[in-house]
Length: 430
Image (cartoon, rainbow, N blue to C red; front, side, top):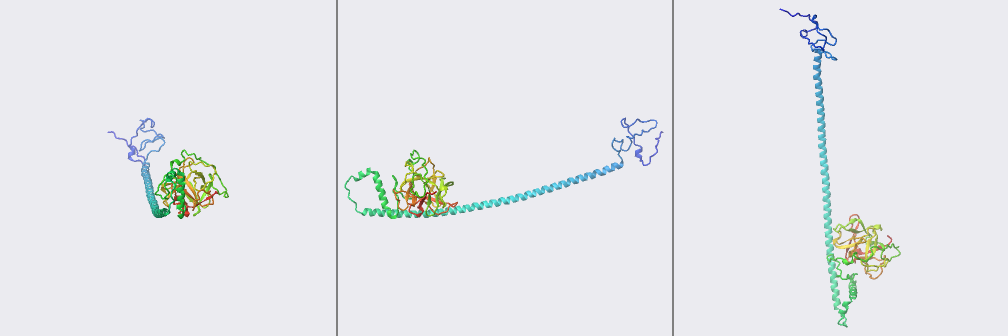
């Protein structure tokens, strides 16, 4: 039988490489020579374990294969380590951020608790202060009401005693039996006689004003609620809305219609004032009148105007007993008082400023009197201490040294006008 001819083994070659058939491809090398039985040597083509070479790359060998198998796991381990380290770093960063957020949230929570505690403490202190203030106001109001009741009782007892003394005096005989009927037709004379008798009957305990026309006598009590006459308002009034401003020198002490003046409280030295930034806290929500400052300010200026429905000549001299209005020069509103709302520090009728040039009512009317005597019919002089009596209620403008917020002094309407706190003095050089 035919035996395969063995070829001599080249040095360094193994048996597997000798029996490996070489595949042929027309594109891989020259044609096979059957006579020699060998493939022609081609520089770009050589048989090897891994097959033909790939152009541009070295042929595979055991050493190359082993080296590639060793380097590939090493590179994979390095990549895995890097990924692991990155994951650890990211986890540490996330943990640090989480811890920072937890600490920040705890700090914010503590700060919110501290702010809430401070707010609760502030509210508690304000409530305590308000409660003490309300208790003090209630106590002062009760004390004042008790004093007013005692004063009213003493006043009415004196009235009764004087009436009894008058009844005990011998009365002159009437010459005409129809005298009462004749006198009843002379309403003006009866009114003047009643005012004269009222003045004479009250001279023993100080000046008392005459009774208001067509109304009951004054009682000077907050319980005696009186309402303004609608017919004496600015509606359909013939009184001019504005009057010329009279800026008088201090040497001209006669107060006239249109005079610009300031009113100084004699007891405390403060001046009557108002401004748009102060309003009442009683519920009327009107602009507040108060006393402030020892030096005259532009907010202390008032213009003297006639009462509603009256039409005096500008510059007319004002006499005691006349009704006037005081219009604030800066805001254009009138000095005003009313029932139903009280000044919180004293519990007396509050004093505000109300209306404007086109809006005014009888609660803006004040009767000018010389303090102590009234001096009705005499000329109003800037050198005289005066009383401003609210015509509707009969009580007077007064002030007391009871400091309020912002170092302002309260002004109220109360009493019959006999106290030192009721005295005001005119300042013309303002």
